[in-house]
Image 1 (cartoon, rainbow, N blue to C red):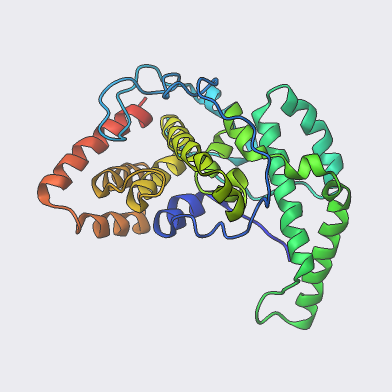
Image 2 (cartoon, rainbow, N blue to C red; image 1 turned 60 degrees about the horizontal axis):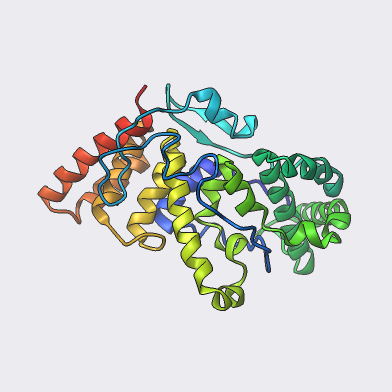
Length: 309
């Protein structure tokens, strides 16, 4: 079965409602987590990209210096960058990895990753993820409900082809168990930083690993929030929508409906459509007039910080 994942609508729409439930597929079972530290190129509480004053419990501060679009694009695979306005964009990935031998694809990327190339590191993560997904599909093959006999045969043939392409990569224990997502996020990949907050299995391992190291979950929450704020400061629609979801769900940060509403307003302002408009109307029903007014004022500060030229 051919698997395609279109990221932006998933992150900016489904994620805001389902809290990341779309990422049901497990990416890593027992990952080795590289040391995650503050003070990497794009961290330091977001000072590099956008924020220095006027925070309110998670709102983005007023911008001191904003990254240029060229700087932002240098942290993304060119194929996934989609510009909305002068300072806003979203991420859309249609291909997880190119067809062919997966290990041959990954080997040169590993060399680049060792030199600090965040995009290469994230591409390794995608290739490893794809092979793990296809290995799981091969162990328990399923076809699309209602598919015809010829369609089922085609889907099984696709799984078999992917498993053949992944055969040598699946045997490389180091490549398959390294936590490439965490490393890519630490190196500054915007795409990896977006996924870091929702792909907990890649970052923390399976439930048994999380129980064995509860402090890792604390570090994950801190990094997840920092990464989302930093990426939001670059004008990312995906990150702004993810922050709205984060404050609405209360997993990586304490639940704050007012902040959730403020970020939703910014997302709706950047890319207005019926879905976002309905979401904003639904959220405002749970707020008082005073809370709505405060959130609206904060949304203007956030928009000024992240998204105005």
